[in-house]
Length: 123
Image (tube, rainbow, N blue to C red; front, top):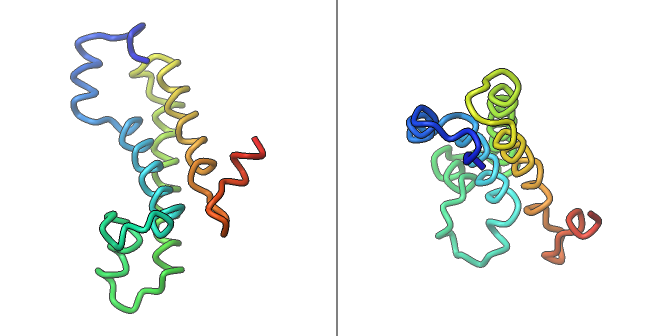
């Protein structure tokens, strides 16, 4: 995705893990934790951020932990939108791919009770 606008400056920027990359990765990871952490039979070994919050903050309900994770996803979206709308560091194709990946994440991780992906199947 960077081939058209690849410069030494862009390589240095990528090495610093810019918000456009970290925000997209954050959205992917946190939606994964919300969507299927309990569906994969990993017996608590998956590093779910929801589970980490529950262990860190005694007395926190799973619902509140999930709300905190959703707030973190919202903040990551704000950063991603800001990067794509106001920062012109990367080529438009890279920005578009980052946005499209983040948009696709909820479809990939919204399971129903049958462990299927109804929203993805609809699309």
